[in-house]
Amino acid sequence: MTPTIDDAVRTLRGRRIAVLTGAGVSTDSGIPDYRGEGAPVRTPMTVQQFLAGDQARRRYWVGSHLGWLRFASTLPNEGHRALARLERDGISNGVTTQNVDGLHLQAGSGRVVELHGTSRRAVCLHCGQVFDRRDLAVRIDAENPWLVASPDAVLLPDGDVRPDSVDGFVLPTCTVCGGMLKPDVVFFGEVVPVARFAGAEQMLAAADALLVAGSSLVVNSGMRLVQRAERRGLPIVIVNRGQTRADARADVKIDAGTSEVLAELAERLKARA
Image 1 (cartoon, rainbow, N blue to C red):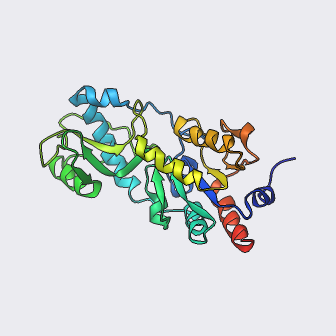
Image 2 (image 1 turned 180 degrees about the horizontal axis):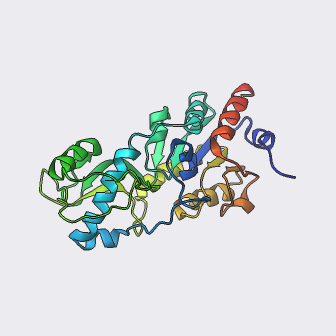
Image 3 (image 1 turned 30 degrees about the vertical axis):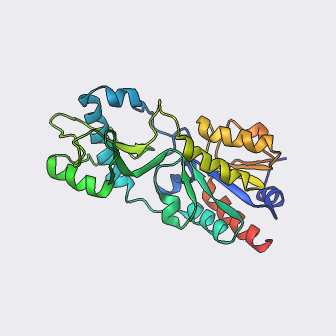
């Protein structure tokens, strides 16, 4: 029998819920998924490549800047707003997200652990100075006035696009020490900072159930939280279009998009709280 929202409501009713989200929560905001049907082919830059030389960093910063201008204009969808309502109603204790788009905060969630960082900031790898991406974008535009995104450029899940050329691009540097800047996100080849993961663990430790939304759980940071929930015997509900690594561990797995399912869950759990 195919699991339904009724099953999810029965499983989560009367429990304090920890929430884990992935890229599938943001697809209805126009940000593509990593692995879903129709997802663009990705060859993400590793942190080792980024640190290796100026040409690799030019490639990254050109694509990141052009993509961020579109990425930053996206708005939360009904799924983000539903999760914010769950927290306001005292049903969930916040959101741990693998996304770097900031849409949970924009939707009104008060407690958000951004496991993989945020595209809203850049950080100097030498002195630690943090820069708002909006201010940095103004500098990049001023130093590279020729840089314009192609109208046919494909936006990738991390807010990146594939540039036609990086020749002549002036790399942004730290205005404090002249050091190397990097977006404040966890690259492939990096690990989630210990303190940040501890925040997600604390949220899970204070919960009676785990709701996973829009994640295939291929990335280990999310799967580790599921494993911790399973070891504690917490009910696990997964809402995701397509298979996940934890389908066999879930008490309820709903194979569907997140926006409508989360909206209905928020409404029905509030009514039964």
